[in-house]
Length: 319
Image (cartoon, rainbow, N blue to C red; front, side):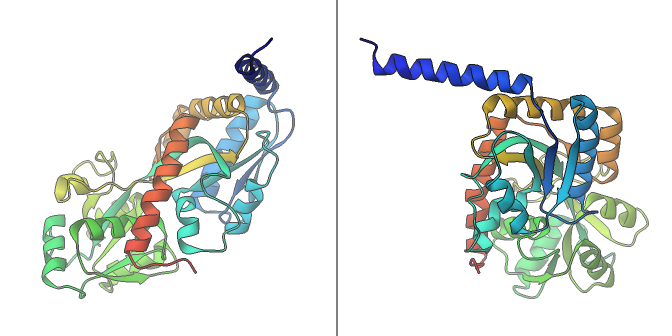
């Protein structure tokens, strides 16, 4: 008599074989990359760059579909898990349920990670006349004046908000959050002195810092960034345990075969090694950071738990 275990192993082997066969013929039709952000955003730009290179590599049309907001992400969660619907999103995906209790999907269970595409470094900027010349001095100033220093962000739950909130909680500071519509408005507020600090995208920090319109104190990455080699990391400058890096990554609906996920991840990794792609990403301040699907699954799961707690500790409840 054939054992249940033997039957199970046989089915697993059959599914693996069929998955690999499917991957060899993938893609067999147009591939959609859904972007839950508007056209012209950094996420959109990354998706269009990948679509262009993958179309050539796969000899198959790859289109970018902008569907801003939670509805765009929800359509991917319910799409056929055959690899022909992908999504390129930011790490904001991981806090969807922390800010919206009616989200129609689970950020972890309803998605399969393909690969991180890039990390997006941020730099702490302060007004040029700020009394703080270093991050330690800024944190000391905030500690000595509880509730009096403001920090800007591109909105509640934005990466710029999370970067500061992680730092604020790590340093146990009382600071006032001032949300803006987006990055340009937040940077302008620093230039005017309306807020005392902001985690800015690297291009703005480089261009305005180089002409003395603002001061750059630290970067949020684990290592210093090439565009600002003399600027220390937050961990170097003041908080050794600080850890927050924004990322952009490609996901698929849960249930997408592992063989297809592996193929897409490997092909994207090949794209991210192209010199023209590296150059294009550096211009907008991004760093190529490909991972395996398993590594990305862990990042999605860990960040969902961690940043959900950060939001709760910040007193932000799902609406």
